[in-house]
Image (cartoon, rainbow, N blue to C red; front, side, top):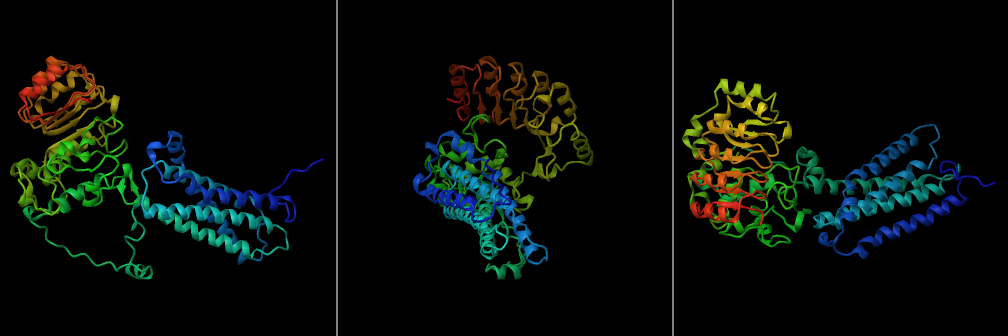
Length: 506
């Protein structure tokens, strides 16, 4: 009668060490061969199953890290303890198996595209090195199960595996968070020990006047760093596009240059953010915060003015609209330098702050001040979605006159709520996509003369209602994708408002 193999008690000299040695060496050979057999990654040619399985890499990789850390701790305790160390092989078996699984998932993620550069290559080979070392450690452990067998070689391999694991983990964290993520706040003694430049104490430097600011370096690049660079940087370049330097913007990615100097409407870094929210090509992707209207206006202004990386604000045509948009950025410039005078003087009163604070209980994260120096309000119902009804929206009536941007996308509001916006005389942007509004709401919007952007995507508006928006002198963008509005009506609107940009999804 045959006996089952017990991984924790099977002594060396039996079949288990030979079996693990053979399968382990084959596994190592297969892992090393993967990069050479697969070739350069090309996400466009990869089936969805590759991307799907690759996304499990961040989940699986924590298993071998945790297991090997516990095994290392156990061995260290055993070395300084009088008790005999445990001879079980199961922990190291699961540690090695999970390391192999993590490497395979990581390789599929790499092949799915969006990751490239020297740091990624280092992480790839570091991960492969760790998985191979983990398997070798398992093989040696299998031959060290006998009570009289030495544990020295096994421990050397174990410590070496953990060292390679730490190196690969650091590279992985650098890809996700940036190369200086771990050392950014390291004290100078530690920085010196690591061979890094000492941290120089920052001195408060007076902000340059607005006209002396370099538009790209001081204004545009900080916007890109905040909104785009997380997914478009060295080591992590979605669509093979990097946005962390001007040269990389010009070089572009799979779709060519990211910017077309003199033409914002033909520049990819403008086209993508202005696509409808449910468009697969919209950037940033779902889950990331959209670029703000004033930020996008600044980027478009810079591109239309020639996208020169060296020119200063004073060398470009600076309109009051762009001056006000720059004033909303946290650039350390005095408010008197950039903000429109009436906005600076319109500080929020204590009563307004108290009202906003009270309403936040019903609209968590939805209602906020446009800036610290402005009493203007912005509102978004995104977190409430279908729970935002006409009755709930009515609670905002006391503060609606102070609203300058309103996002009611995909909520349950109807024409009744839009009628309340009649008091928002300074409203500049309104998003009503995928709501139940009809042409009746256009009567209200047509009277809000400061409106610059109106999103009616997926609504029931028709030609008759939309034509009323030609009364808006400041209208710049109108989203009519998936509506009943006809090409003829769109042509009439374009004729009445030649400067307006109409997005139809075509």
